[in-house]
Image 1: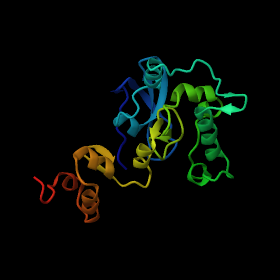
Image 2: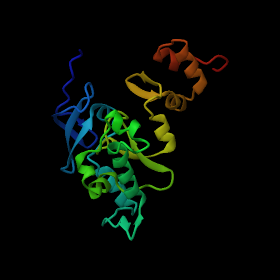
Image 3: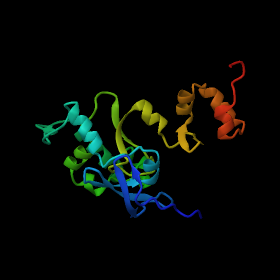
Image 4: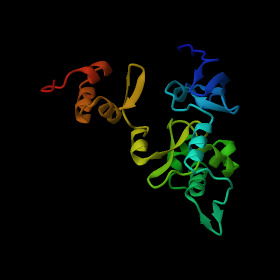
Length: 216
């Protein structure tokens, strides 16, 4: 087994790694980090290395406040009318904890949980996630094997979520892990070309750097 690299003291965005945290799943290291704002958060290793998580959530809240979207009070379930944020919070808990839910098999049955801070408090969930950005967005777990918790969740479009599905084939190229569609877009390559090369057994370097026939 490869020895885990110690990253204590390293800085990623606003986060400084303080110590190793308890793993929830074998082989998926988590780290306790201190944020420049004074907050703290536990983050999955991959989200630090790829800078998907760069703060304790304060960056998102600052952005929301700057754009006039900050929410001062709860007020998300008044007179039977529930907001998108509140409905998302309830649905998230339902699919992770209720075996009778139609989507439980893809979440709770797989061991996906909602962190205690969010399970017990909608206010905490709203504080960490910020306001819903608008039509076309829903909650997305950055690490599909991780739980619903600060640092592993974001509001994302359907396109982003489709690219982040757990059955998507990914390529590690020069230390960066992306799905085939993302690499095609980033390198201006045809998706089918990349897919065909992978199917033929090409390695990642050759797949993404070999010239396309008839194209200079």
